[in-house]
Length: 152
Image (cartoon, rainbow, N blue to C red; front, side, top):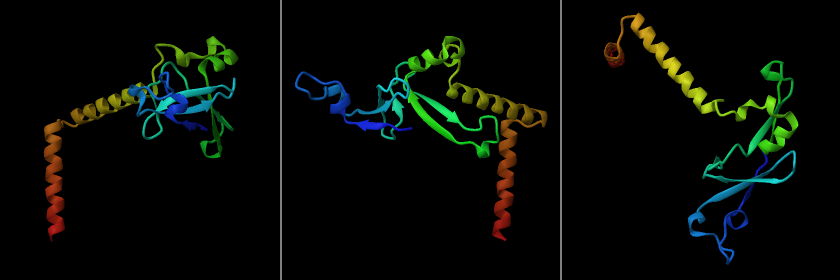
C-alpha cells in the first residue's frame, strides 16, 4: 500500500504559533490517498508504521486479487487505500456487511479459533485419560529419557 509519511508539523494539531501542541509532540502520522475520491486519508502510526488510534473504519484498503477463483499460487494482489464512505457509495449499504456492529474483527475470529483449538486439545487429553498434571509428568519423563540418551 502506498502511504506517505508526514511530519507532525504537516499533519498534527498546532497551536496559534504553528508549533505542535505538547500532547502531540511525539506522534507520527502517515497519509494515504483514497483511490476513489483522491483525497488524503491521514492517520496516526506507531514506531513500526502500524496505524493506531483509528476512529471509525478509515483508512480502508481494497484488495484486488487476480484469478479470484483460481489456485492461490497463480493469484496476484494489489491494495488500494480508500474511505469507507467512498466505497459504500459504489457498492451500496446492502452489500457492505463489514461495517455492521455484530460483524466480528479478524482478531476476534482468531481468538475464537484459538479457544476452540484449546478446547479440542483438552477434550482429546480427557479422552486419553490425561489431565494437565499427568501430561506434564509424561513430558518430564520423556525429557529425562532424552537427556539420559544424550549422556551415553
